[in-house]
Amino acid sequence: MTSKRRIAEGCSRVELWPDQMHRLRRLLVVFGAVGLTGCDSVTDPASEVNTISLSVASVTLQPGTSQQVVVTVVPQARGVRLAVKRLPPGLGATLSPDSLAPGETHSTLTVAADATATSGEATLTVGAAGGGAGNLGLVIPATLKLYVVVAACPGYADPSHCPPFPTGGSGVISGVLRERSATGSLPRGGASVWAWVQFPDHGYSAGRVQTNANGEYRFPNLPGALIILQAGGGGYDQPCASAVAFSGSSETADLEVVSDAAPIFDPDPPPPALIGVVYENTASGRQPVPGARVFFETLFEIVAATTTTDELGRYSLCRLPPFTPFVTPVKEGYVTTGRSVSVSGVTEMDLEMKRQ
Image (cartoon, rainbow, N blue to C red; front, side):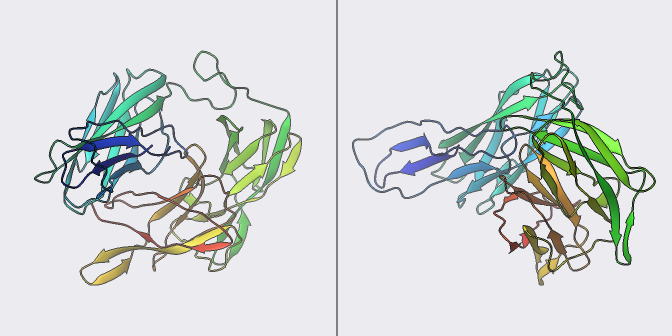
């Protein structure tokens, strides 16, 4: 949810109340809180509204891993101090920066799990306090719900380690993985293909299979569900997503990867598609950011498509699934900030990055 602050002009009344559910593909949820009232029945119109939001709605951790979430405070004109409270055992959290200057709206929350973290639901609390004179003491709290998973579920659920969801089936998805370059397209052998199985209320990783010398793969034991196939990683991107509404019998789905060292910009990609430029604002004006990885995430933190910007900062993603998507550019030395997006046809959206 979001948290709002309303100040009636000429009165010391302060109210904080829940506004709406902020639901995206992780299990982090922000809750508002009811504040205090210190004046009579003045009902002047609200003069200011502050909102705390997150770049994602859920995160899954395993011991020894960490995830980053962008915290946004808008509008932000007076300066804000951020803090993480009530850390559960086994979890660590840092905010960078933890003090936002006037006009600065983004901070990166890094959440990590150590070897003592236990599986199940844990709760973090992020608080924001106004940093300007006359704004001290007005606290906008937010509660972040986090699931920590001790063991992965690489196919069939292990009841002693994984959530009790049904897994497995008799269906098969097969196809050919090809590597596309500026000179053509060739089968790619020895590559890994992963599958994510998504039911209406839960999902799980079905593990991975490997392509043969002809680039052919075969994924068995799949149930009737939405299957997202992933073939990127290891120096390769998968610019076109592959989301199969699987019947549970057999399907064919060919996949394509591109070397992230030689990215390809497609000005007219197969829709639904997303194209644009990743850039930064500098003293000399807007400049492209080459070599930035662009991730199209959907559902519960599932990366459906990836690409890398070319020398002009251009990117293109295609055949994108529609469910609650985020697009996130990532490059070392820059702040990682995700944005929600609605894709229809070929959608153009430039993405700004800021240096750390």
